[in-house]
Every structure is written in structure tokens, then in C-alpha cells.
Amino acid sequence: MNTEIKIVADSSADLTSFTGTDFASAPLKIITSQNEYVDDKNLDVEGMVNELIKYSGKSSTACPSPIDWLKAFGESKYIFCITITSALSGSHNAACIAKVDYEEQHPDRKVFVIDSLSTGPEMQLIIEKINSYIKENKSFEEICNLITPYTKKTALIFMLESMRNLANNGRVSPITAKAAGLLGIRVVGKASDKGQLEVLEKSRGEKKALISILSCMKKAGFKGGKVKIGHCLNIDGAEKPKSLISEEFKNTLIEIYNCRGLCSFYAEKGGLLVGFEC
Image (cartoon, rainbow, N blue to C red):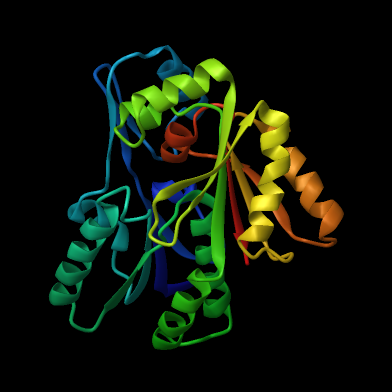
């Protein structure tokens, strides 16, 4: 492992560890009037999700502070830092502040901060691509020049069974969230080019929504690249788009995994996040 180079991401990347390159996760927090959930390796995600289902009050999230980012940077000479979309969180801004402080304290070190304009599985694709460049012994500057164009070739489609937490957190209208829940509507959307949530389709029931995921992926430019499917306590739902993708695009590398705290908070039980290469 090359300890001179480090990859750091906030916990919305759904990673607590990473094999191949030195890695650290800066945890976000989910906050209610009753509890504060720290999105680190010790978090009981399923327990948090089930507690939030019963909770009816306001909720919020807190991003890593610049100090948290500096702690995650450690003592590495070259750091690649990937954050959740700046359109939904202050994590990117905090990381940029930490970068300035770190480089002022250590003039011989460099930090490259990447606004993923996304979350979860799409962030993982970016991290894995950086790791592949490191394995190819590319320089820090070369990787910086290569990774930005790569982020333009990845995308995120999501399917939500509930928007209750999004409404509680002020991300969508409470009326919209309540109507979707009462009518059994499943929302399929994407992370827009500006990193905002953009609704693409609304389907009555999960079956139609799962089928529409692949259609939305193809409209976004998917032609059989790498795919990662994060789910919030919905492994059966995650298997359906995997099967449909595999049927049409043979030999496509598809990974299914469990969302961690922050992504589970927004996706809620039953939600899916699909990151893919275009």
C-alpha cells in the first residue's frame, strides 16, 4: 500500500474502509431531538433506520467540520478528497477550508478536493478510479487532470419508497412526501448536473419503478459500464435492476451493497441508489 498517497471521503460514500490505498472516512451525523447518529463503522444502520421510522419530529444532518477533515487527512503527502454534492451539504466547503489550512501548514503537501455532485455509489466509482490510477503509478498531477473528466462520465439514479426524511430535512415539500406515501408512489430520479435531486418518474408500486431504473440509466448514457447498487434494507429490490441490467448488458460488473447511515437516512427503508459509468 502506498502510504504517501491517501484517499479521503465523507461517509456518504458508504465506505468505512478501502483496500489498495490508504483511506479515511470523515463521518457525517444524523440528528434528531432524541438521538445523534454518527455515521462511522460503529453505527447500527438498521437500528437507526427503524428508529427513524417511528420518529415524527424534525431531523437534520451535520457535515464534517474542517477539523474533522484535517484529522482524516492525517500525515499523507498527496490527498484526494471526495465529498457529497455541495448542493445538499456543506461538506465540500468544509473540505476546501481544510485543504487551505493543511497546505499552509505543510507547503510540501497537496490536497485535491472533488465535489462529486452526487453521493453513495457514484462516489465509490470515483474512488475506485483514483485507486486504479494510483496503481498505474500516475503522478498526483496526472490523476488530478484525469479524474475530473471521469466524473463527467458517471451518474446516479435513485428510487425512493418514502420521502419523509427528505421532507423533515427541508429537501422536499411535506405535502409532496405525504401524498407519495399515501398513494404508494415510488419516485425515480437522478443527481442532476448541478448535484441536485431531480425527479424523473413517479410509479405506483415498486415493480414499475424498478423496471424504469434501467430505462432512466440508458437515457443518461449507460451502455454497459461499471454499476454499483446501494440499498437501504432492500436486497430483493436491488436484485431486480441487477438482473435487468445483466440480461441486456452481458458481462457488466455489478456490485450490490448496504447503504451506510447518511445514504440510508435520505434513501429510507426500501430505497435504492444506482451509480454507473456512462
